[in-house]
Length: 248
Ligand SMILES: [Zn+2]
Image 1: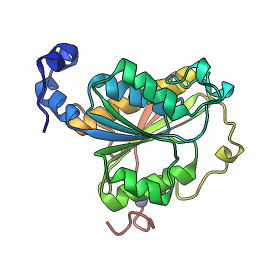
Image 2: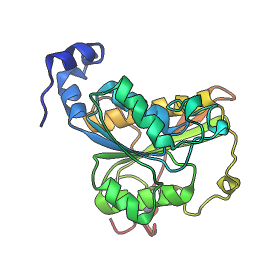
Image 3: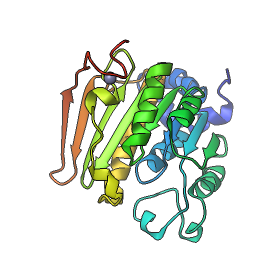
Image 4: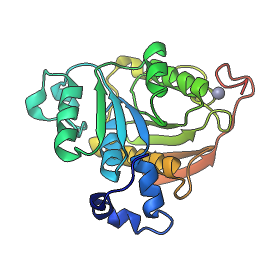
């Protein structure tokens, strides 16, 4: 258990002063860890704002090298890194911006094997990949290891956000029993400010789950339509015959 330092109290005083947050929530955050799977247009802001809020450790996972087409949305990336591994660029940024946050970077995407290993090392998962294979692998690992997962997904001008708590809320397979086919073209439309807005909401949700601060989205789906500028929140249900979480 790491205590808050005087510098922590100074750095985070503007959030510590929020009613019901206080030093207690800050201390919980400092002693918490998160996996952010993929740190692109969606996961990048999640990881950034978790680090900025004072989380103790982040495991980031993202394979591949930076391309020019990533740069309309991937806030952790820089032009001079095109052609180089994305996680190297992200790691360098965190070292400069938030050296007090312990960032561990893995240049891989989630599979059944890696997901289980990564999820076992953290308190919460932020699910931000473009591929449902990765999302299902992370969901399965979270259900098996009883870890909460903030589920954030977007397409074009729309986003969805919920929190999965195994045995308590629907899991991803309850919500999306079969893999949608849209992502397979791997070129879905995205406006950077839309994915970032959803990423910021996902970071708020993760902070709430980790600290107990405020109300959260357990059992609720937040749907965000940036085209109409509307938010809608509605309850979601578990599926008793879900092959992943049905036995819990
Ligand atoms: Zn389920």
